[in-house]
Amino acid sequence: MGPLTSLLAKLSNAGFSEKIIRIHFRTHDSRPPDHMLAKEATRLTKGLIPQGFKLQLYEWEEIPGGEDFHDRFVLTNVGGLMIGAGLAAQGANEKATFTLLADTHTQNIRARFTYNSTVYNRIGTVVQVDSDGNVEQF
Image 1 (cartoon, rainbow, N blue to C red):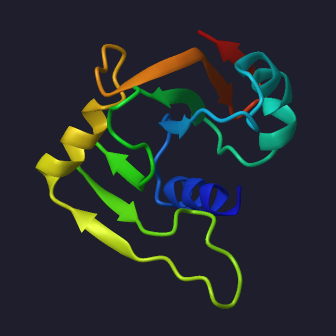
Image 2: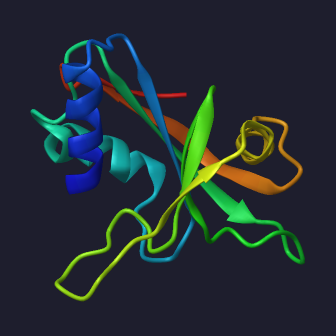
């Protein structure tokens, strides 16, 4: 949660408000199902989401024989970054390389995560938690 908390704080301190941050992740046997994630979301995010912000969590699976779901990105409607080791690189010897993406590349990656995606299959419901700890599933 450290990198996400830092990102949210920076956005809030820069004067941004009323933002929705979408987190897309690959399904895995070790991940809890959406209803358990929704149950724990308030506890896990307490005090971390700036006022007016919302966090939405989306679970996806790879389509057999389709594109790998591996790279880590921070994508916006105006650009993006690819993060080599992911946002959880920790430890003295861990390093992460950040690569600025061209807008066209960014938007192509964002398109993978739409409701009618043909690249990945969405699993379960979207779990949304707001700055007051309210949780919705849709």
